Image 1: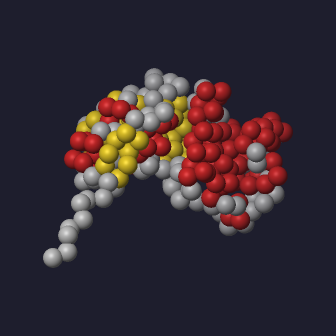
Image 2: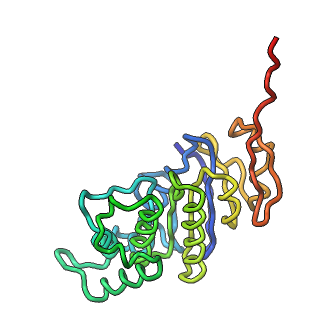
Image 3: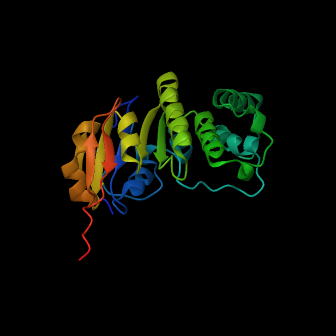
Length: 245
């Protein structure tokens, strides 16, 4: 699926992977997280992934998937507590410290009033905050976000991404994400990587990757790229309509 992908993500930075459907974006994140076999090497903060136990890996990497599995009837509190699993002894129970970490995350993400609610009853934006809370209590240094704004309206997209950016600066998180919304991706990422056909075809700051030429070549899209306050704005342009005969 991927071929000769060479990527370095500096600690504390935000790198976003973009590309057309089927380019290998989600596969890349799953390989970095140790969820897929691969040839080559992946290092997490200087340590080869192969040398890490599953528990040690889970203490370093937290993943927010496109469609996380939500056990039926599970409460927001119990779901978020799953983030503490890497720190529990086999057959052990959550400690007071684990609960304190969850309540601190709830306070940070404005989720305290939702603690007893079944997770499946929350709105899309509220669920995304819970998914981030679980990742936050995991205590990981690397946050993998696979299409974190999928199915969210533009207001909730901004809310979630602003929250991630705040956590990156206050908690020292490193962020590796995939996104389809190109303009929004360019506003938040320090660096972008464009995948096509499983290979890296462009990398650099948003203004170097989000160009009309590259997007036309690899997305087959007709767009205009305009300067924005925080990064390039990608605007789809409808092809010239044919005149009726």
